[in-house]
Length: 216
Image: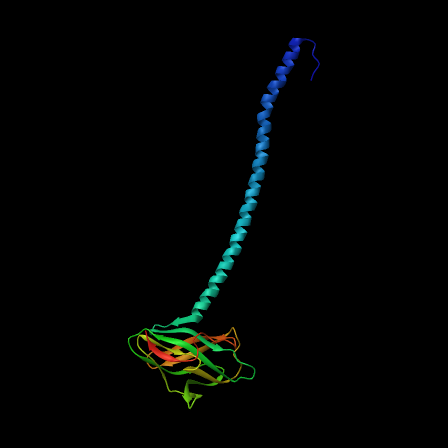
């Protein structure tokens, strides 16, 4: 504080300092507020950028998941404009040294006319035949059939122990996780292309052991 020589001067000096404080305080407060505001803005920008990056990663994951689900659905069921639908087409992966394989699927006929599967074809095999399993004197035997009926408004199930598509003379083993493109030939519907998913060698679906035709 400055040196004063009289009470009046002292009062004057004190008044000047109080007035200076009153004038300078808002300016200091304004600077402090601006600095704090800048820090808050920087924090919000960083948080926003972080949120955007997380959303990008999440959207990529969701897109990949949707892609996987769509592939699964396409393998699980293929519906044609002929009124035929194919539920869960599959084959087993080849065991070491195995040269044959069998394809299974449920064929649903949503039309008003009975149709008939008469043949099947795919690349990379010697030949493809339609087969069934019959029981002769307690012994299960495989027999070739000329066609498999698909009743109108019903379905036929190709399953282990019953009707199936036999792939004979494989050029390369069926590998689990891949698929086999098969062209099915019907009397009325004509050619229909269906992808058969290759399941593990040990795969055995619930209820396997018979093939049947039935109406809904």
